[in-house]
Image (cartoon, rainbow, N blue to C red; front, top):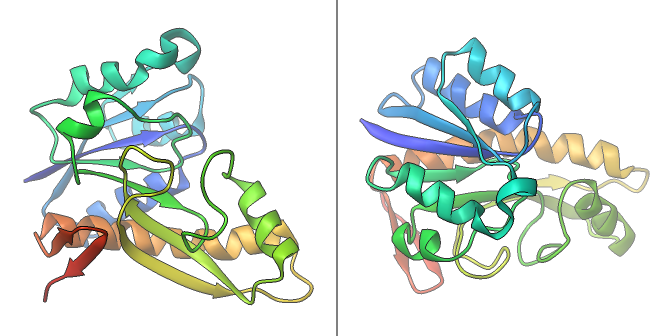
Length: 204
């Protein structure tokens, strides 16, 4: 079995897409062993309770720059892949090196556009509309020492319309996030993903 841990900070719709993909057999060889939140009382934790998934809270207001150390302590030797699904804390230190090419994140734009420090949530979509892009989307990438700088695994696109609001665009992109994240997990769990420098090769 391919064991995954999911990191969350909010409502957990991307987490739900993973749970659903496991339950319907799309991720038939995967098991969600742990969900970690950096905040208490978020709805993602309630989703876990409904599906009897183990949850842990590593409150960033308490652990501050030790959040990554606590995650490593909890997961090392037990997990094949860490999935950041709406996770807002910065991962760093030994966690990154110990789980090299074993931590993925989903970002609500086509990286390298509208990403990096401070770019998360609705802000990303506001910037895309302000810039006047015709296409936006989402990116699943490996996490490295930078912010949204790791090798790209999967990208999905959506059109951007002249009358779009940031909220409308966010909903359209979120639908694609719910497809892209399980797809990336499946490819990795089936050992079809190879990293060569910045390039990710998807094997048949």
